[in-house]
Length: 317
Image (tube, rainbow, N blue to C red; front, side):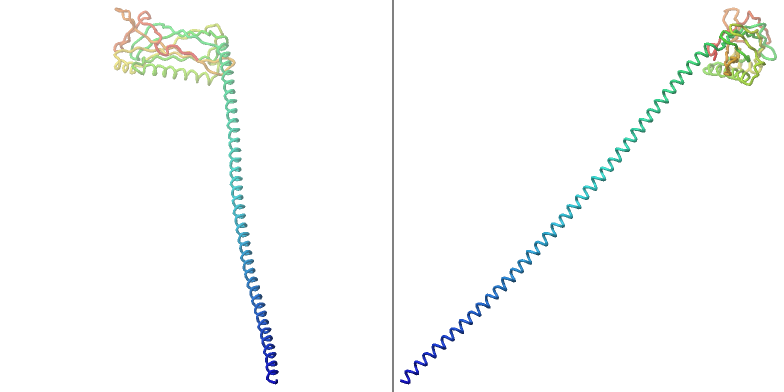
């Protein structure tokens, strides 16, 4: 009985121990489960934190990238705007310069056109004034003849030439001065130039004398009137005649007469000039020829003649 009871107690004890062991194991399992749950939760929390950190980093990176791109876009926009502004300013400056240059060119053209118009008006007025002056001023006509013999002697070649002046203009000529000269006629290719030079030189002397005045030292001739005839004795010096004869084989005397004068209302000096050749009449042919200064001889007026020079024979201004 005791053994049976003892087995019953032993069984009960054994059951209690199994139950307690199961309880302990269940508690251990529960604690392990809770621990594993905590670890899982911690791991998930760590993973979530890491993921959040990664997402935050990615967001921060993306924000930084977007900010960088925004700055680049802003910089590009700024550079584009600056370049556009610079180009616009340069174009505006160039347009302004072009406008100024066009305006200056137009002003210059207008000024030049005005100057040309003024010059044309001045020229037209001057032409009209000259035409009026020419129509109202005195004009002296000169008649040159020969008088007496033409003598070849120790002095050279000498002759006397009467000069008669007639005023064919419409106002009085005053301060009249007349100069006369006898020279060997130039020959060769330079004859015209040398003749003109000699004539202009003689007229320049007469004009200077008129310009220096006084008018009372000169003659005055009313319009449509003639003055007194003045006879001039002129001579080619012997050495000049000999030089011309040696060069050309004969001497053709050339008479140059120039008279200078001005109008009573104007100080401008005018002149009239005649250039004539003195030719000996060849008895056999009747042609005009030069003279030989190698012997002394006198020629009567019927034996020589005055012929207008082919060049610069008559001049008036």
